Length: 447
Ligand code: UDX
Image 1 (cartoon, protein in one colour):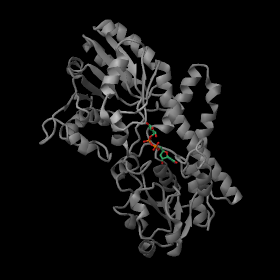
Image 2 (image 1 turned 60 degrees about the vertical axis):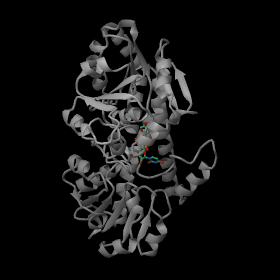
Image 3 (image 1 turned 45 degrees about the vertical axis):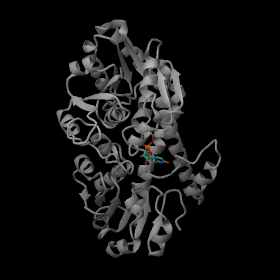
Image 4 (image 1 turned 90 degrees about the vertical axis):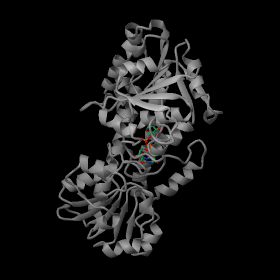
């Protein structure tokens, strides 16, 4: 009989995983403790902007015309416990307020709420990004609190999806990593992932700590690549070099690779920044903090880029205070194809200039509602053109496709001055310069 699957937590990770599991043919029950989220999902609506996710969801949510009906939602842990053979835990682990460490309260409460309802054979699979050692601790908790006793197993199966590509990354993963401790876990997870879609996908079986560390070390490596190229951008700026050319040239070396070498205002979002901090905090607890001191530098190079952008803007405006200066900001989200503004470098730069007295007007294709919620005192415009109207400088801070398609001449007609700073090195300088704009990237020559 086909396995039945529950997915606990229906954020980016959980909603996508639940829909993907239904797509693969499983009966799926998604659980969340936030009623509004459940109501939206039951209507086939997604509480965030993620390309392709709503379509995938609507293909499977029970009650939607033409759907497979394989995906349902609940708030009831008893129902989830009775339903699932495999329970994926997909709740988030944000940075703890005022600390580096991860806030484990959602993971802990998900496991505590589920455990009493695991009466028969069941596999609990952690997908959340957690401090190493969590799986050990949760396995011990389940052994003590789940009535099913030894029939209730735990596995760790980190997820590597990127926002903006969540559906594709889930349905076509680069690799599947499962941390197990004997028992049936590996066999069951091979069954879950034994689909035509994952054929040929490397399946790496590890112990618990390795599986947990794969995730945090992968994110640390990605963060390191970005901060490395941003450090090179600083040197290029000082020496008159071009970091975009440098990245291209070093990237042709396969050992280095061309991806994740785009210099700019740095990384943000709900993962990389908090994951490297939580990793440092955990290493400290383990007495291995020396090993990760470099991550502190990665973090500080990253945060410095936001300040550099603010200073570049000040310089381009002739120096001195921002007071009364009109600044257009294109982009608010931490990356394109997402409405997520968590730890967004773009919004941070906009906020810094605003707090220094600048008259900032922000436009973002999908992130306006979230940006308004997080930073209500900034100015907002409904279109890029409206944001630029009357601006003495334009800052391009999130590389949406829409911004690459802007007409520099048309925009120049509404701007007070034709000055553009590209904080993502993502626009083609030529058409902008041809239309009379002063274009500056980060770590690139002024002209
Ligand atoms: C990341 C990891 O990529 C993913 O594997 C993990 O599961 C979750 O964290 P995500 O946060 O969605 O995914 O975004 P990602 O595409 O990694 O970008 C992170 C940040 O780095 C963005 O702010 C992006 O603008 C920035 N970035 C990325 C750069 O500044 N330069 C680059 O070259 C690449």
